[in-house]
Each structure stands twice: as C-alpha cells, then as structure tokens.
Image (cartoon, rainbow over all chains, first blue to last red; front, side, top):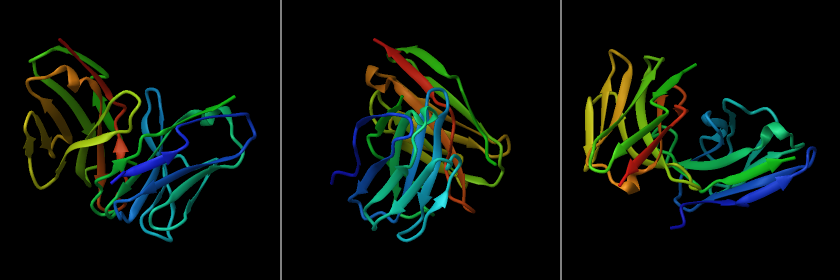
Length: 113
Length: 112
C-alpha cells in the first residue's frame, strides 16, 4: 500500500494564481482531512470530509475550497493564492471519523510570491 | 474551542537518557490523545495514542500517561537513540466533533 499520496511535492505560485492540491489514499478509509503547517503553529485543520459526499470547515477554511471526488480522493483548491497561504499542506485519512486515528501524507510545500 | 499547550518547545538529551514531553488541554470533554512524530521533510506519523478510559499505555520504549483530573498527558521515551530525533506533536479530540487539536510541537534532539 502507498498509504496517503500527495501531488505536487513543491509548488511556487504568484499572488492571485489558482491551483489544486491532490490527495489520494489506498487504505479504504472513510474520512479525509487537509491541514496546513506553519512554523511555530503546529498543524491546523482547513477542511475535512467525514465520509464520501460530505465536507466540513475546520479551523482555518478561508481562502480554500475542497472536493471529495470519491472515497479515495480529496482535493484542496486555492482560487486566488495569497502570500499568507505560503505553508506546508498535509492530507490525512482515517478509517472512520469516530476512530480519530489519522494517517498523514508526505506534504506539499507551497510558496506564494 | 479546545486549546492544547505543549512543553518544552525544544529538548536535547544524551543518547540513552529518557525524554519527557508534556501537554495540557482545556476541554474536559476531550477523550482521545494521540502523539505524532515528524521527521524532517516528512508527514507526521502516529506513534502512540491513549483514550480517556486508561491512565497509561506502553509500546516498547514509548509510553503515554494521562491525568484526566489535571487535564494533562505526557509522552515518555526511554533509552533514547539518535533516530528518535524529530519533532513530536501531541493532540486532543472529543467524540462530539472528532477533530484533532494539535500542540505546537517539541523538537527533540538526541546527541550521540
């Protein structure tokens, strides 16, 4: 099993550009999550999907949208990137939301200039 | 909402010594407490977790203790090795919304 995979690994955007971060898991997990990690801030939840067909806001959803494409895939979209969105983005999955054991991907390092 | 405080922010130990990282949480309804290890350039990896119905859990050189009354929990690593060097995160969660709230992390350095 590859576990949780994320693409791309690195990305540089100019202010105002848009992009989609891709995440996929092959563990047949029901729940998926997007986090951002900033120095000294720990991990903060952006959006999550408890199950296929549902999405909910986390702690810092402003400036982002998500799509739960199917059970395997959960994408994060930045419609108009801002320098404040420079961060490392992690996708995670969980067998089901009630178990709360989350397994993380390798991350995408995004720089917005 | 839930607030998780983690201390210390950095910890340096000699190989073979023990390391202890402490976290406190604010919401008494929290009942799930995982610990994650993050190596440089990688995603966090779940290393141990504890639920509120137990006070201690061990897995080889790693243990976690929970004091519900005081609302704090700790990670204990014994016989530390250089490969234990990483950033460690604690987190807390409650059944009503299942979200994890993370501490800000502890950079552990094990010196050979």
